[in-house]
Image (tube, rainbow, N blue to C red; front, side, top):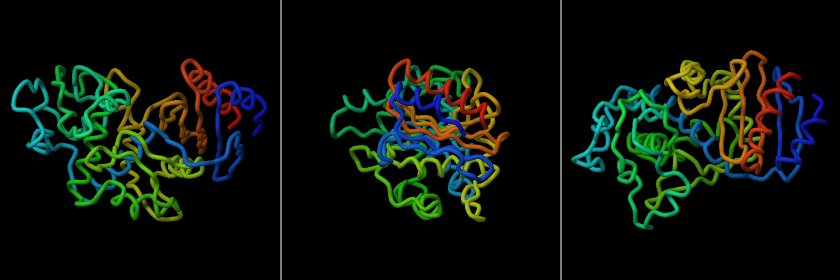
Length: 291
């Protein structure tokens, strides 16, 4: 693969690293900065999705359970709106129907040190019916991680170590926690470019890694489908052109999976503002056209 054009883009938008695999072969690999573990931001949400698929397979939870039944001590007793209608699946689709995004980076920074983020997650009522309105927010994936912790009886990271990270050869990573020490399922996971790329390859291989089914293939299939109207979104994966789906985090942390090309393109970056659109264009046009 020719990276001449991408090199120019990389320097313009501050790409740190890139890996491209096609047909099981690494066809492009370049480090513009040292391949350190970096925050993959909201691409973490897709890891929480994989945890959910595993938990569903293990019978720990069902997508049809009601949210109000799962968090009885944290949900307020009034002004719920449509929250009683919300199910677990709505935590995965950005379809909870709340009136505004919440628990985003700036929100968390302003919360008191003693705040209970689970209670905070229900600060705003669901003014729309579940699945009726796409609204990107950190509430759903955070609560999804909390639910897995409660049902498994262990932290989200401890749950994932033997089930996902260790099978992929990923040593215990750093991960943001809330004030009570609970892992933040919506962001804050630190991975190297190669670790991040392996997660993309796992999705390409329908949840299989070195002959072992790590994540149910049926779950990966669902993550490739549009799950909510009003947004190109599935179960904590973004949907893209040419039948692609991707893990996507702030500042250009992207692992884009192209099943039709048997390929994965993964980048870690520090791009801001309009630079993000330039990076995505390079991935989905220049690099894709060479696959």
